[in-house]
Length: 588
Image 1 (cartoon, rainbow, N blue to C red):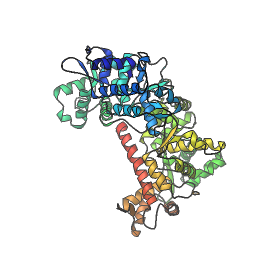
Image 2 (cartoon, rainbow, N blue to C red):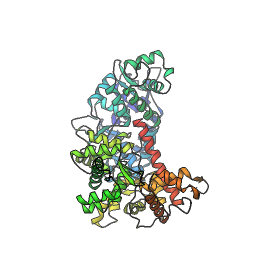
Image 3 (cartoon, one colour):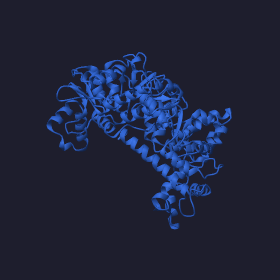
Image 4 (spheres, helix red, strand yellow):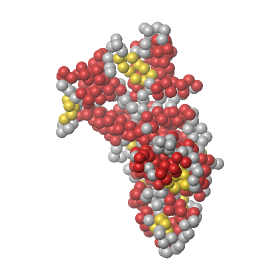
């Protein structure tokens, strides 16, 4: 949504009976964002959203904001304003200090808090239904722009009519103050991909009718009319058998985003150098295994190999292996000799290949710099962009090949939760009722621990249990709320109270056991524990140790999950559900 001061005047004039030609560019853009409609009598009329915006303006003026002082091109509403309000709502109404001035001068902030008008705008934005209309001229403009995130300077002009059309249709977004970046949104990316892959023989490249035909081709191809087939075939959206081509698949995902709502998650991952080094060691052991079958990546042999490179790293072998398995880069399973063997996954091999050129840490903010652009109104700020640039995840015009790989990894992996003692301690301090800034959590510790606190919160973010907003506000996710409950009674001293191995055991218990909904318990018959062990894929020694620790941590009772265990399973299930849906939308 993009509304300038001169657009406000136009809305007021139309309400007062002014007639406008359908070719008026400014009126057309307001029509695209569902503020005006072109009626059968050949005149523009205010929509419900248009009326609501004028009521909002009236309320702001009554509160002392003099709209007449604004310049004609002043951006009253833009994607950056919506993003600021969304971020502040998630922060319980607190306004980030950098947002105070731009929101206050628009009547959306007062005394560091959002005003009622800010919440009202959020509702108007949420209920407005933008049109999707991409003509040949706009399609050519889309082709000329980088996917982003990219710097605005020298790349895009917010006042340009074609740029305003894109923003009105929620296809691009600008970053929050200092607003140095822009990016195509999740919807915009899918439409851009389709335009780059397809053909444009007609004056209209994408509109709702075309999207509905795409939906039909995907779900009920027999119902396509001859004219629909002819159009989609000519545009290289389907083949002669009515099957969607690559461009058509992108448009189907665009339809899903348009009709079902934008992506809400900002998935991420995080890798430190010790973990990357260990991944290389696992690969080296597999290479040696080809000529010496006695060499194989058990935890013991991995630790011994690490010790030859760095004795200090080897002392944390178990924790490192948990971290790698947590992010789906390795998997562990027992062999025919009941040894737990570590294997490099497909994603692990891609990370190895990427890291061969230059070993480097991959931080959560660096990956979020890319994944945030899949949302509806967000682009990254300077800090995230700088980290992504440092890690070679973005270039001047968007993701690098490496960045695209880590972005897809973050969206696609099945996270096998790993929580350390310190992460558990930090999580206990994060409130879902009163969100505060990351730096405020750091200030609760000695200055020497500030970086440790930052890394712990970033890891919780990468694991899906908190979300760090571009402002630095930290909020609990739904999975995080469950996890916090699960860990509330766990004492410190376990080192790694939640591990991927524990997750596998809990999933096996869920499959084998009987759920008692009223008591929120899952019970396992004594004779079924062997089946649980088999399903977990763990060797007997590891399985026994996991059960022992789980009972000490009070996740498991004699023959059932405790309340803590049930909440932990709920956290894991919530995480899997959220990311499975995200992955399905983008990589189905």
